Amino acid sequence: MTTKLSSESVALPARNVEAPTYVFESGADACKHVAFQVAGIIRDCNSLGRSATLGLVAGSSPVGVYQELVRFHEEQGLDFSRVSIFIVNEYYGLDPDRLQSMRRWLMDNFIRKTNLRAENVHFFDATIPIDQVEASCRQYENEILLAGGIDVMILGVAPNGAIGFNEPYTSQSSRTRLAQLDPETRLNAASLFFSETNVPTHGLTLGFGTIMESRKIVVLAFGDAKAAIIQRALEEPISNATPASWLRAHQDVSFIIDKSAASALQDVATPWRTRGVEWNDAMVKRAVLWLCERTGKALLKLSDADFRAHGLHSLLRHAGPAPEVCARVFNWMMQTIAQHPCGQTPKKILVFSPHPDDDAISMGGTMIRLVDDGHELHVAYMTSGNIAVNDHDAYRMADLFAEISQQIGGAEETSEFISREIKTPLRNKQPGDKDAENVLLMKRLIRWSEARAADKVCGIPSERVHFLNLPFYDTGAVEKLPPSETDRQIVRDLIEELQPEEIFVAGDLSDPHGTHRVCALIAFSVLRQLQDEGREIPEILLYRGAWQEWPLHEIEIAVPLFPRDSEKKREAIFRHASQKDGALFLGADAREFWKRAEDRNMETADAYNRIGLPEYYAMEAFVRWNGECEF
Image 1 (cartoon, rainbow, N blue to C red):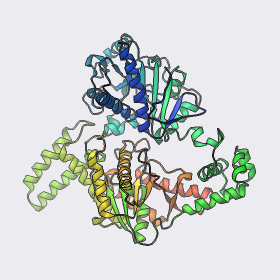
Image 2 (tube, rainbow, N blue to C red):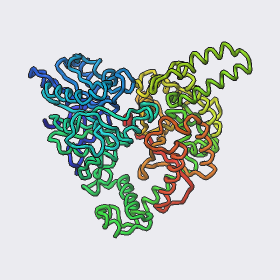
Image 3 (spheres, one colour):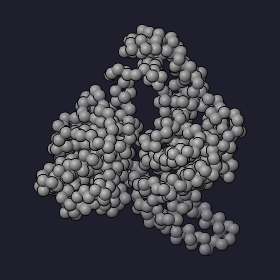
Image 4 (cartoon, rainbow, N blue to C red):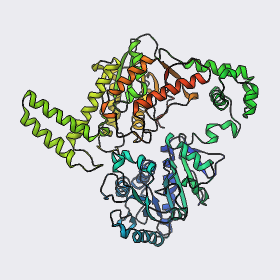
């Protein structure tokens, strides 16, 4: 089968890669395309009176595909009654009703919403004794053969290049088996299990040899966090260190990615090295800053010879000679430096923070500067952030409340409530289970109190601190609900109430459980709605969270921080005590959030200095919203 693009989707084929690769504007567009292809295969098989057989993975990458397939079923009558499903992998030892079970995820997000027949849905039995695993895996392979083989295999790719649980340096000819999980795989799964120690050490997986027998393979990868592995898989030599690279040998494989996941590919990162480009101002700035990095020279030290030595002859012809083009870029970068990012005339400014610490971590120094400049600064925490509080912190606070009640009276009733509603559920909780309602309330109040304390450090009074508690977040689990009209209305109500003249939004794509992305999309959709109604909207500036910084060529505003700004920012971050010393969602980076923030801010300042601009202690960076509602 050959890949056909959906008539409703627009993608650019990636050049100079070793497998068919299509780059979509957003993950949503990409998922619509894949669903369109899968639905076509199902319909073709149905018309021939045979079963279509799908290999499926769980997770955030394919969820949009499954949502579209469900929509096709509900609105267009797509019939799944003959379709067979085989799951690609599962954690060994995990009960099928556990929240982290891939079986449960697929049941909840796809299978129960269609007319798939139970006898056609195949999962691993992850709870069988170890001495029965090998026979069970052989039987699983036999069931695939009896189903006629897999027509379409939908895969994600892990940051370490693993496919399913086929980890780096496993055999290319491996069959379905019990596999030991790589430490990086377990670390990346830690947020799902609320601790790395809770992540199983082994998993059941289709073997790589089994996967390669599929008639068609589709690999999905979205977001900046997948950019490095996509570049390795598609541009570097095929290697046992990167199992995803083996897929290039398949006769009908396609990589379906978004712009962010494509950002490290040579044709995207340095297009002037692979093809002719239009030398507009943005491309000129990008290429010249890249040349600074390649040569280790400051802007005003680059020569014509440097341009020619690195293949930028056409740029010289278009905008040269070197002193002229470099002076232009130098002036552009100088203009990004803003000691007073919103001016010195007092304004009303609103900062949207996805969790109750993202504001301090990402733009705490700028917030301090805005307050010092006399602006009326408001902060809106979009979610409670309660699932990021460790159980021991909640238990400690329960003890504190009980002791306070004893000291001030009313001890018996309060202590009984705390024991029944908070301590007992915490003691009885299994690793990775949802919290009881009142435990979640306790954790929400912990984050509430920390945010208020941090804002006080920044000089923001409590009446300018808003806790939105958007409903999409309140599941008590890492998996969230889709954003609803209620979420959007809450955000709209605040904007209409405050009428801010400037708004800051977290434009971060690599938050490990996706809340930043959802919060940004909610804010953008509200702003677009206001725009469509003919309302004037304020300037929107985007900051990035704890996971990354804007590329140098994209930065439009850089706020210099002096040592006292950074020290005060650190103090504000420290007020979020539950997010220090082993916070739940640190991701693969072991540094605490305050350390990441300081390192990143100092690196941004150093990047400016390396290209010959003034040397500052640290800098926070922002870009302007371009009006898009989807990442």
